[in-house]
Length: 337
Image 1 (cartoon, one colour):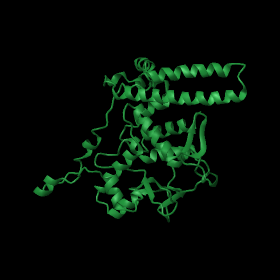
Image 2 (cartoon, one colour; image 1 turned 120 degrees about the vertical axis):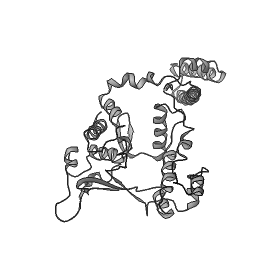
Image 3 (cartoon, one colour; image 1 turned 60 degrees about the vertical axis):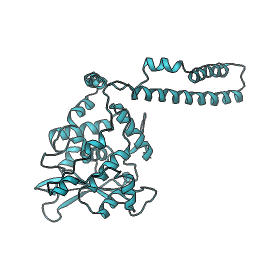
Image 4 (cartoon, helix red, strand yellow; image 1 turned 30 degrees about the vertical axis):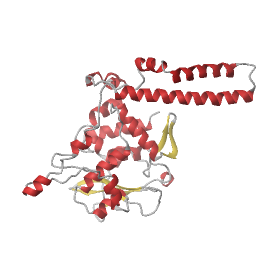
């Protein structure tokens, strides 16, 4: 459930998006509504493009053809409120798209109509973190906790913080999100000096390790060690024996089905051992020179991703040439095979 509108801001058109989840935490009533503006800025200018939520939402909406009339990116950005009357203009949505998933489940054959589950999001985000060389991964709870810590320190009332978090009891916020680290600048408060609000940021991220040479597949040395383990060797022999029995012409069909079930179970156990060994290798991998990163060596083969690699870290507005380039590349990636 969302509403996309354009309004005037400092004499220029600005897109704003209001989003409300249909279901959250097992309930579908009184859900909080979150508003995301196009323009986010400070004394230092706009944040990096990758942290501007409207960039990804707008690319998602346009690539899904969710706006009535299916306008192009250029037509959406050229939309302005009427000169007389209302200060805003709501972009109407296609009725046939209202029941479609905003974030569909993705497969190797393309998106499905089914919504992605929270567990799927969390697991994939953690997998993305491992792909960019964070050995311990980063789950959705990490980002949610960080934003609630900063929201609590920004001067909002407890009621607004709880509404933002969709929580009914402040003890949940205090016990599960704020943690034990105190954000009060005690020395400055006692001495009557300027109070700082950035004291705990580095300590909250100090335990997040990053390794530019983190292996994403089990290396040969790790596989050799794994094959020496008794349990792995037993599973390997069992799979070979079961495969021979399955392929035997004299095996009855009913027995063959049971053998396949046993082999699938052995496959699962073997994958579990390989996954654990890979995690062990990742945890013990020494930190090497970041310039040997594999991504940089193959980047030239993926033009859209190469441009996004350069543009997403830029501190520019969404309507800048770099921001529009990033939007086009994201739309191209979502609509390509």
